[in-house]
Image (cartoon, rainbow, N blue to C red; front, side):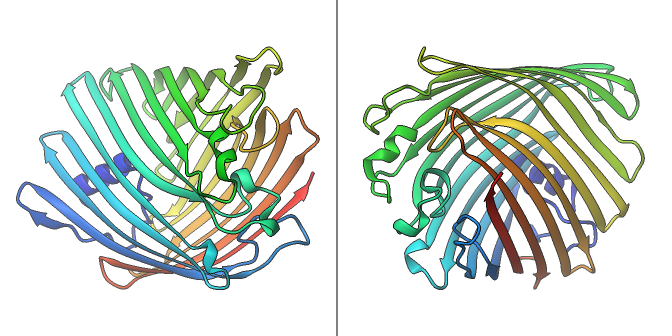
Length: 381
């Protein structure tokens, strides 16, 4: 993978395969590159609608996902534009089929040796599968997915050279989420329309050539814009203030990781809703015994906005993933995740166990075929 392609993949949030995997082939077009890809996935899902234990239905599920990425580089500055479509097909339930559309752009701009800016913007026309999000627990009584539009903006300013002992990052982001009222919940979906505005600052201090310690402060304001239209009687508008300390390291050429722990305080605008306070964390370790094989371990605790009941969701997640490229065309990916959900303010606590196994065949540098086996159980804790 070229430097330009690798950096752009990171900017755009594209997952990269182990070193043996066949990289997408860029097409040079004047001053930029174009990378077209087509991914076709098919497999068996034993619980596609996240039903409770004992109520699952299983079926074959397929996706067809054409995507095109444009890359341009001017000296150290990288610019990307991505456009993609995902068509999801439930072979035994055509009413649950969906079409997601993504359009996003990003820019990494190096102003000088000590100042850099990263900017991003995107539009996502997405969906929630039946039985997830606002329709959790009622998948047997409704038809079809719940559709929504996300508009996002983001930016990061970094002061300090990569080799400097101290660096500062100032970041901001904006999300506007709007639900389609023609979905299975009708006008009630309007209660979930919201705007998130985040501001944050992070200090990174190098204690060695391979290790940084970090301190981070973030504040996210969430404004639910159509609560009355959606029938909600008490506002969920809130401000979430988070503080973390941690470290990031590259222990050896084969092992890297990060860990941070902190405190989160969620203050609701409504005096009828009790504020929340939790100890949160996020950590991950990646071990690559070979350039073509990687084991990743993750754990986290976070507060999530509730799609239906409660004040928010207190979520603890643990996961493990093994990605292995057998040759330039064939790779496998096996993962397991345990997610514990507490719907704060209610009696509902769920444990979600998810396992997936995927075999990817890169037919050439543009066509990718994936076979997947997915299993998921949701049981009361």
